[in-house]
Length: 391
Image (cartoon, rainbow, N blue to C red):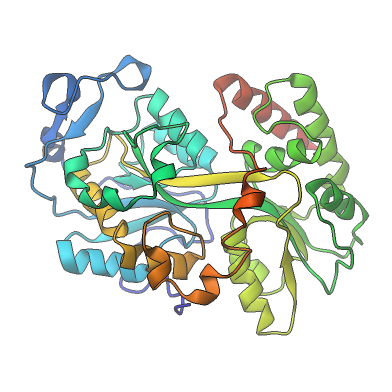
């Protein structure tokens, strides 16, 4: 695993441990002239979300000078790939961090950030598509799309990769320090019971956003994480409220704190926690990530180019760059999530490929559920989340 220096030779707009960001205006209006309406060009005539004509970019358009503004989850791509992209293609990549899909979507809805590339989870991709915020991809500019594993070309939220390309995938669950937590829960329901009984001295962090902690609460109650039943969502709210007194922080930016040993029990994503496990092992402090029996959330994050991008050709070139097996393996080695690119296991470190926290058994994933949130479901979750946080 490489030494993590996320600021090396990069223009990081906001410190990575801060999830709220300032808008950055980049590029010029001239980049917009490179776009063509799909209904009027050779790229097809499909309609985008919200009834707007789907936009794409011309195959012959030159790559912009950048800088390319990439909105990404905390510490979620290998800086060596940013530098390799710049060396090979020219534009510099500026990185802006965010802590939840809801935060990213709110920024896009506000229209204040001209992001060139974003990395939303599947259900947020669908939201972007429905609102006409996702640029229709020009596949001629992404020849390495042939390297994407077949099952990731048939997603429910964007069949055929019209607007998105899978970045990596993982699962959501609980983790803990065995020095503090002596129990060995096997399911999400058992993990919630452990959380209820933790000593007051235990430091607990849960993920922010209405979709994340409600996903685990709903699944612990054996409901679908996509339920639109107000009664089921209320039961999940009550479960979360029952443990609220034991929760110290609600934050999706937790890798550094957990790696210092400052979180005893938390919600997290498997690749992030794999890094925490490695860091704490150097201090003889065991951390366990629960790959649960039964249900949990299985998710796919994706590369998407917003319709407001000022550097859409350069954005296409970035996606193509990280679809190369060697670049994809560097991503996996850095953030410790599987990247669904054919041949990546040939180049990725064997200790990562063989790690069942990172490469979760397919038999378990088959029982897990992926979020596909509707506006109604989101509204119900947002209301319940507000009530949970107010306790």
